[in-house]
Length: 219
Image (cartoon, rainbow, N blue to C red):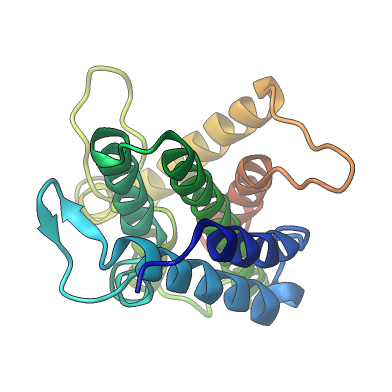
């Protein structure tokens, strides 16, 4: 039976309480509970997520997060937004559904920032030499993506390719480049936080800087 608008709004308001939590390791259990509530609501309203236009994932939103991570969830939310815009005829229903999808984006940004903060904390607990270069590359792939941000006009490449072609020195140089880029983005950002409203995009940038500083200590 489809959820009523009143039920959707009631459940969304409960999720919003979790958005008051800073994306830090100390809040991990509570934030993960907020994530679960968010993805349960998405399933109850929209069904299973889309992997691409017209193709659904063989599993629910929580499974998509567990197997493929927050980036894939973010793409699925954007695909669902397009579907709602194109197919939901009732204006009020469309507003409610788009509002919940916007809420889900905030939850996913919160989780991304939390994961990066936890990853930086884990790196800082290790001493230089505790993690092999290959082990660090695997962490970079998992926590930052497959490779560095390519300079304008260049094709993407991987952390593994950097190491194979340029060695540890090249890997260190690219991490330093990523750090300088993140620090510039942070210093020039117009993102700000308001009283009782955490900006998760801003926290994500801050945690990225902290993570890159921690990763460089291991080279």
